[in-house]
Image 1: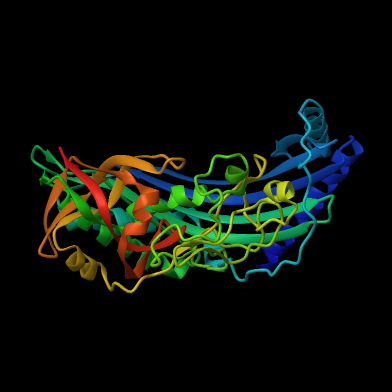
Image 2: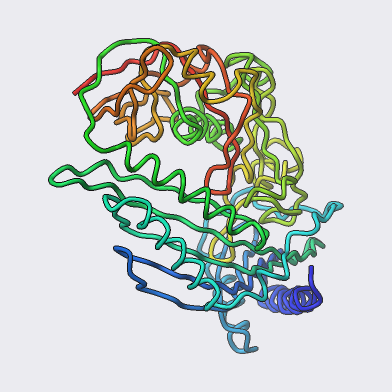
Length: 457
């Protein structure tokens, strides 16, 4: 990190240490402070016009305490001694009114391998004026492509984030990060015909990559939004469906990963309970949580509890490899955390993956998978419900295309897809050799899945 960020990290650690001491002085048996200093710049366009350009900067300290294994939490965005004293007293008071839990205990410190570099000095130096100009050019280029295009909203944000954690158990660490992210949503309109709305978004840690990122969003948004015009009626069938990476993650992987939570397993809420080490999906499917991948927004060196974040195989050739543990779930089973505590300074730690990475298959490009499908539905986005406990899903295929002889024949609308994800994971026919980054936070391939129920409206 830069000298400025290193200095800020040291200041956060010192302030956090002070708050830990105050909590102990008020009667806390254990205390932990997670501190975040964030400088954000946001640019918003609506209907093609600039609506917002603002900069914000501030620090938040979140204090978690245990008093007789009773949990209390308080947060503060003030740095004065009086404010810290107030936060410490509140957290301890709240803990004394909470029920005890034998598993409420802070984790011990562990060796960290710091992931460098996560900061780009160019993002730190970029001003709001530069963001406005990039966003203005981006919106203008999109609208110049085709008069039928209408932008509902577009955004460009930069973030410089420094976080630190200090606990009475001996945990002490700080890290800084930078991001610039962009998004766009809208549709194509031709006379009385209005195409389905479409969204695109991505982020990067490198300012130099911003022009390429915006060009990619421009191309993808325009291509899909224009193709959504004049959809025809689809066809009902049961069989193969091609899922774009976004839809594949929403329908299949997000519910699957949530069922890998150790807390869900321990409380009888996971359908995967008792299946650790068993094959539950096609051998084609391998999934990692990879916070060491600097290209993903969830990359970092330590989690919300100061535990090391490392590359973790979640599924290997269809076999379930592990549960996800934060310190609470680990205490239940007498083991150590897998580094999957998540959250910020305004709440207690939660549990989940950091940087989902689905390994590529051997099916070739998107066009190769279209040819493998031959005839059927290609789903680019999904809007509906997925029940993680049962695996049942049902919803509307958005930005859907009908495929004939391995090529896009037409856009289709009002098409419903349904099935059970746990059954259909076994029926993944092929995964693409290429992957897409999803809003900067995950990597996933295209997936051709058999056995999907398709109902045309």
